[in-house]
Amino acid sequence: MKEIKEKCPLCPPVEHITEWKYEDHICYICKCANKNCGLWMIVLKHHGEPTEGELQYLQRVSKRFFPDKKWRGIRRQILGHWHEHFCP
Image (cartoon, rainbow, N blue to C red; front, side, top):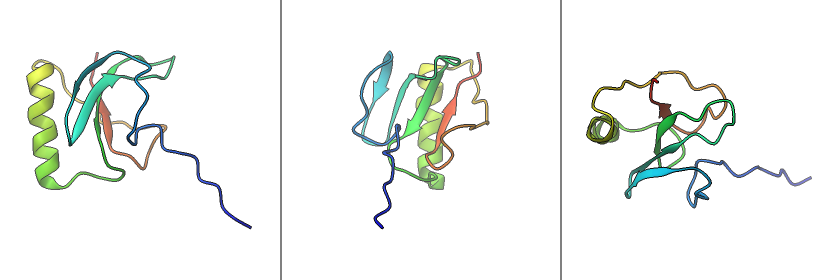
């Protein structure tokens, strides 16, 4: 029996169904598509966790667009793909 895996909604190519602020070869910043959330979030483009270098890069990009905001540090629904919501 063949296992059917659902496509990760954060893995490229990602449909731009919400507002986007930034995108490059490592990450993108967009509004969360969850109707109960809507916060801005930064998303690593590859599935999994970031390397230390990628994490530092993500922090720099975050500061460029949201200098006064911090990451929430909570992932509730898409656990296998690194992303962080910005605190409101």
